Length: 353
Image (cartoon, rainbow, N blue to C red; front, side, top):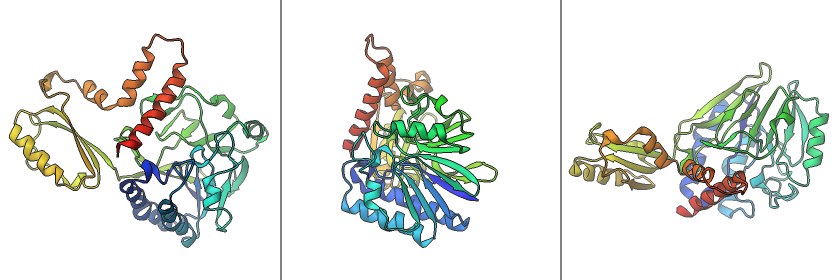
């Protein structure tokens, strides 16, 4: 039996930005659902954070969600199992009020929602589902883990020691030793794909922010018999960087079609030919990109003196902020400071567009 696994879809992300909304649904309509149909996959598991906003969902996002995400599962006769994630819950201390049950409820025979821990069997494979763990369900969840006879665990979990995003490790959360009884653990919550050979964070299916740029995205197919997990890469991006250096490249014939419907950053490493640069940027601005930003931090430097490390770090804002916190001479909990910094940075990016 083959099962599709997807997580952290975050419908309504970026303040309901329509550019992102269409980017999301292009993935579903051109790749995800056609793949499930072609390979006759009849079960799909969503590991949480189906919606983005915890407090409300706009009518437009709800309409698209129903027509372009929920109904295709019914039309294709695919069973959908949805775990409640932290972004799906109205309150932080309980899963009782959540957008998934309010938007889907019991209206569809092929969809089941899991607000609490529950064991499920797929073709002889026993799986413990663990939705978001909070103050209200913590004791019952730990009890469910202790009593479980399942070989596999799937959840929306915050486990210490894994990367939340590229280059930023989470130092807080559940100790991974809690899950040693399971053969394998699959989790949503962190958008960057990573694993330690036992616990696997599967990552988001597409990009949301600049820190997702050049971080491959996609969904997964689990074979219940072999226990193998295959990743299906989503080739679509919405963020692209151009490291402009006219001492190394000729931009007169540079293909600009790839930047259509993308947010683009041009990092100027070296521009010796000002006319060529002006011509290139003029063409780029006509390439139907959503946005073009030009960063000329290196305009006064010779390309030979600009190391790759400098260029990369200039773009990795989260890493720079994290390093700054590490170097602070304070007695405060730096892990908490980093989590707060990440939240503020994410909110700031929402305001950017």
